[in-house]
Image (cartoon, rainbow, N blue to C red):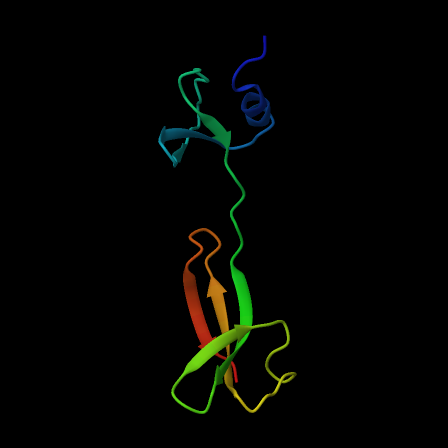
Length: 104
């Protein structure tokens, strides 16, 4: 019979950091897991990296404007409707906008 937490026990024995679920979706570090079947354990996931993208800000000549994200931006892309360029960063963990800056 296979233990419920067999994979986590093996990972912990090999030095992985283990987390225990306190409530739905809320995980905490557990330095000394008891491996009871009533609890949920997991190997601490790797942190997600921030996402950095460049984008052109365009306008139709009026106040209406928008942002178009593409791989080729400042210095390599021009169009009469492009008003400028920005670089924005999305937080890897929260997936929310972390920063934005004008790059040209």
